[in-house]
Structure formats: structure tokens, C-alpha cells
Image (cartoon, rainbow, N blue to C red; front, top):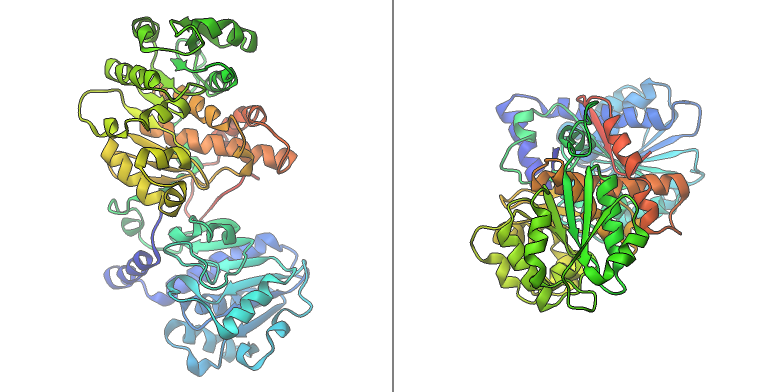
Length: 533
């Protein structure tokens, strides 16, 4: 797990590193530059292939750029270095590294004396651009020369590598301030910044590398930092082992209450996802009159028919039979394909107060809760809840519009998780999981292949399966979100960006588990994430 910080917080950590631990800024800048060089070497191992154009602003971000230029020259790369202005306009560590370049006889071109189109003239796909212009301290829209330069860089065919954050993106909000570099890669230092994961800034980030530059772990793992990035190694550490002498009873039983007329597909997808999520036995419970429909769709999932209303809908009248069926289960889910009615709400209320195992709540059950959202804030004994709303469902539960949800995804999820004392998995890009204790987790996996009917049912089944195997509600939600998105990433890598259904994502669940299981041991240095390779 990696902490996520604002630009302001990162500045405080940098200053404390220098003051409290005595690590000079020059060393941090040197380490930062070397981490970018490491990525550039991986992208262009052939030093004779193309050129590398480095654009350096006046602050520490520009200083990182001068370090990068110096080391690339030392390694034999063809480098063109651009600075915003004369060395006399620079200060501090950035000035020192600018002077070092000049003292070594390197040429540094000045942007203010050139036409912006000259910066990128003749740069093609074989070349690389390094954006070391603005960094995390930007607080106002870019304008003038910088605006023209960013436009020119984005018009180039050369891939761009951003240093710390794409220039023009707010490190705190993800807002694009006037214009922003569209990076193919971003190497951010010590910790990811909020703006790299919040849209629209996240769309400018490309593939993100979180690079260790020597800041003490006491500062980068401080418990008061509540926002976190889920990593594959965290998921790997949480997943239960598969024992050689294990059997279907070893890996838990899960019951999913789902389905209504026209919506049995949601029940089937959730049940199959729970099985592929590792649960030993999966039961899908539906109204008795729909059981034959589900039996025709499912082979490995066991179907149960409970008393309904005669039209294919579950009712609270079947509670006792449901509880008897659930007695041996380690996790339950309610909602896929259910109708968002008062009867569903009544069933949920009675069920949640009668069981002690995790209860995953989705779709129709969330819609039913929206009829009486204040119920979630009532005190009393109930099952540990995992709520998995999409933005529209979250808006109905929270009493606001979908647009308002999207404007405050992180803050709203954190607020409601604490108010409802539930795990809240707010789906979307990027999916946000908030825990009742105040911690927030951002999921880096997933892509638009998840923007199709049925993928939410897969997530419900997967989280339920992980809870049935013994994971606490919070960890089941975090691991489920990561693996669900990773399956979509692997499908996209394997077959392309569109033309697929939820069942196609489900087919890649085993590959997602395998990829996480095979991750090499975590080491200090650069941590790559986002999108499957």
C-alpha cells in the first residue's frame, strides 16, 4: 500500500526530510533525476535511437530536468536541454544543477529566445520528451510562453515523460489549469499526488511510476495520511493460500440473494463470479418461481428457491428459510437483479439484523435503501456491510446528484463510510473504497471495458467470495476492486479496447489471480502500477 498526498503535504514532507533528517535537497534532486533516467533507459536502451529533449522550468522540477540531462549525457544519449531563461533567473538547487551543466560545457538553449515550434521541430516517435517544467507547486492557470510550449509538446509525435506530475495539472485536485502536458509516462517522487489519480488530471498521467528518492519511511508511511493507493503486493499479501489438502468446504460458502423477472442474468453473473473468485460453494437464492430459469443458466452454482410474491420477486416472508440456508455460509450478498422496492428494503433490514457475517449490498438492494437512506445511520447490531454503489446509486443514497458525487468522490465516500459505519466501494474511474475508520483507498486498475451491463454483478460476487474465504469486509472489498479491474486490464491487453461483455471480463478472473500471485517480492525503488502488461 502506498500513501497518497497533496502537493502541499509533499512539500511539508520534503522540508521535514531536510530539516529533521538532515538530507540535503541536492541529494533528493539527484535521486529524483536518476529515477527518471532509469525509466528513460528502459524506454530507450539503444542510445543511438532517437533524441531526448528536456524542458526545464525555473523551480525544483527544472532542477530535476538538469540532473536528468547531465546523466543522460554521461551515458552517451543524444540530449537537447531547454531552460525557460538564463541561469541568473534560477535559484537554489535548480540553479546549482544548471551551473553544473554549463561548467561541463553542455549547451542549454533558452526557451524565451525561441519560437515554441522550434522546441519540437523534427521530433518524431523515435524521440522522447521530458517534461520538467512546472511540478507540483502550480496554483494558477498556465499562460504565455508556457501555454504555447505545452500546446507544442502535445502536438509532437514524440512520447512524453513527465517529471513528478504533468505540467499544468493541479497536484491537489487533478484540475487542468489552462492546459496540461499529455504524458505517456509520469515518474512521481516518494508518493503519488492526488492530482495524478483524480480526473481530468489522471487522464494526462499515462503510466505512473512511484519512485523512491530516499525520503525516510517514517514520513511516507505516517498514519495521519488517510488516503492510500492499492498495490498488487498488498492484494498478494491478503489473499488466502490454497492448501494442497483443501476442499470445497475449506474455501467458504457464499449465498447471493438475486434475480427478478428479466434480471436473472445478474444473478447468474454474480454467482459465477463468486465461484471464480475462489469460494468453495456458492448458492444463488431467488424467488421459487424463477429457480428453473437460473438452473438452466448455471451448472456449478447451486440454486435455491425461496418464497416470493408469485411474480418472481423475493419477499421478507421468506426470511426464515433464507436464514436456515445461510446458517453455514461465511458471507452473503443481496441485490443483483432485485427490484428496488419497499419489500426488498424490508428483507434487507431483517436480514442485516439477523446475521453476523459480511453482507455485500448492490444494485436493487441499494435502490431499496435509497427509499429510506436514514436507516443506514441508525445504531444497532447488524452484519458488517459492504456497499458497492455506482455514482447514480451513491447520489440517491446521499441525497445529491450524480454530478455532485463525481465532483467529490473521495470526500463523499469517506464521509458516508463513517456515517453509515460501512465499507463503501464507490465504483468508477478510479474506484474508491472507504472504510468506517476514515481510511480511503484508490484502486488503480480497470478501464472502459467495465462500462457495460453486468460488470458490477461480477464485483459483488468477487467481494462476497473473498469474504467467504475469511477476509474481513474491508480487505475483501479492496482486493475485489483491484482484481476486478485487473481482469479488465488483462482482457484489454489480450484482445483490445471494445466489443466485450461482462462474461468476457469474468473469463480473465483466473489470470488476474495468477498475475497477483506471481508478483516478485516488493523491493525499494520504483513501483510500477496502472494497466496490465
